[in-house]
Image (tube, rainbow, N blue to C red; front, side, top):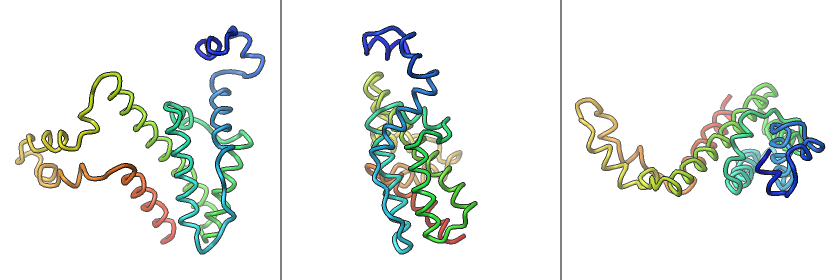
Length: 187
């Protein structure tokens, strides 16, 4: 709150005329990001792509503002824009034939995953920039570290190091979304 007040050239007490506390501010910020999301008209034939698209939009918004995903992890949707997004996601899943309880829990799981993924990315980027810990992003270095492990103790890790370190960009994100969405389709 002090940093925000300083950026706005005002005192922290002035902010409390507009927000109750930091959690309230976090909710307003996430609501602002959610306001920029475009929600499709639910289509039973395209529900998988639609829910994946909403999650990808959320990911992109969170990655624009490192750290905002941390706030999303502990937030229940009560801001009108966050409720609008939850409502849109629920409509998409229901249109796809997902049972209401499964859809509700899937939305929770998807939002938690998106926030956790973005938090991990933002922490890794910050560490890389501040602490010069580039090996986290360097696949060759990870492969070298796994290869240096004793094979008798870590036979699967040493044998499958290439698979453990595979993926470019958001490949792992896309894989996990597909895993969850395909699981819903088969319930």
